Length: 268
Image (tube, rainbow, N blue to C red; front, side, top):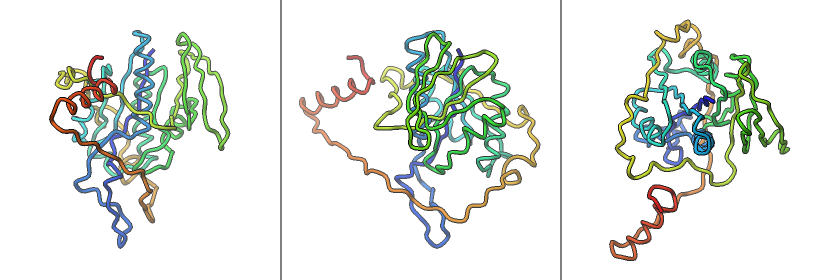
């Protein structure tokens, strides 16, 4: 089974500053991270790969080449392939134009299952999963809380639909791909890169796709193909992060080692 993960690299919105005069977000100097719900989707796929070595996990990211260091860290979690869709003509694409670009690549890729986050923290529209599935003429379900695959034939999932929790089963078919948009409940995170793999060479698994390959009409992409007009933006409130400082002594070293083992960066 080949699983494609839509992975967006976004600014860390907890560091955003708001320009109230122009109603825009100041992004200069802001750290870039993997969108949390996309990261959760990737973790779900990697867990399937942990128990079934026939599962192939690939990520698909649309963005500038400056995201490459982040994608290399993704590959060091033993993702099989990372696709970066990047072209100067894609700059300024709204969710509709983005969906057109992503769907054109996904039609070529022929995945059995496509995962991604329902929402992104830098836009929170929830459009892309369903728009991509519409353009590909495949089924999609958003707000998926969890799912499980039985012998790669039946996919059981739980989703929040109109504030009601539903459970359903989908029979996997080679003729029909399924797309799931996941949402996070609680503190579910992507696994850390293991210490021994921090410098793992992964260049041979990273591929850049541009519009010379996708061949999309320039009228349908970038600013020209984006009907969305932003009137106003605002900053949501997020829970403040906490940090812990340890002394460089035996007790502090033991505490740090214990923490690294707990999150999976070191062998227990």
